[in-house]
Image (tube, rainbow, N blue to C red):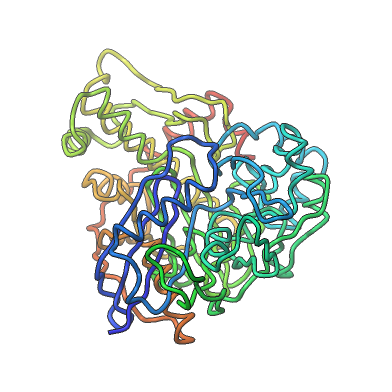
Length: 476
């Protein structure tokens, strides 16, 4: 039996899954937590990877591996290959002034034209400007910039402090497309945008094709033997799309720490409304994507206030009628990215002595979370991206109320893939592709969610609440 490993270095943890190359069957797994802070030293990701490998029983019987990870988050490297300083995560909101500055200097539409991205505080280029503005000494020391999966792949090949080897620093199209200095039209970097943001040129990872090999593992890494084939790796959503075998006409709604809606497209997407980001995928196509900062943690807020469990929240929500009696939640608990409102807070609208009940509040929490995601589906369609069916994944996808209410908002079939770590599965698919030259065919198990009549009231209330606070201007 040939085994491959998929590594997912996400925002919250590192997960390692070892799978049978022929069937995709999970053989064993391990995980380790990342620190909760939003600015951390990259060594935390490396140590978590080694611990997760150890908890997975090591990789001594594995033939290939690949790494996927949180997109955008930069790793700043000096001339000797050492980390310059702590890295701001993609969801750190401290770089919003730099978004404003870059849009003012280059032009909002020009960023979209050149890179496909309406740049947000998540994008790597914004973090470069943040470094230049807040820590100019570190900016001057920075000789190369990678993102998380690039850097971990490079470390697995034996490079790092004292052994720079920047010629071996590699990435893939999906990660390059999330930097804000790569073009989906040309497939090339835009080095002048790097210089504009950081104030100097730096080494950037070489972009690999979907089935390319990054290299092989080095000697001396605990739990990992030398000579294992390493795949190109990818961003987290591109890996999940690969695992789900996404096709043109499909969209995915992922409800985890953040909310993400993405679909597959044969051509780059440029959304001048500023909602959809024109990312690339892990197959050679494109992955138009939009994201919110708030998703499953909206449910946490609901259960904490109501003093109930997730199951009880779902039961309560289904006791209420669509529209929650007029009660509407805008769930911008941690600011928001879509719309671009980093300083916003959550707000409850339409409360009366009659409708302010536990069931209505439970339903308003779920409707608010889902309506924020459906806005992104509408934006993708406005860009000409076909969406004929929707796949629902992530921790919140398991809620019966989430499933039921979503069918009342969308107008396409809803499919529920079986629960799984789709990012690490996609990374393992990439490992298999790097080993054999062809992606393994691990078809996911998917079930249909029974449809329901579309309830236009839910989205109407969401739009009205957003307009009442003039939030529509942040989506324009």
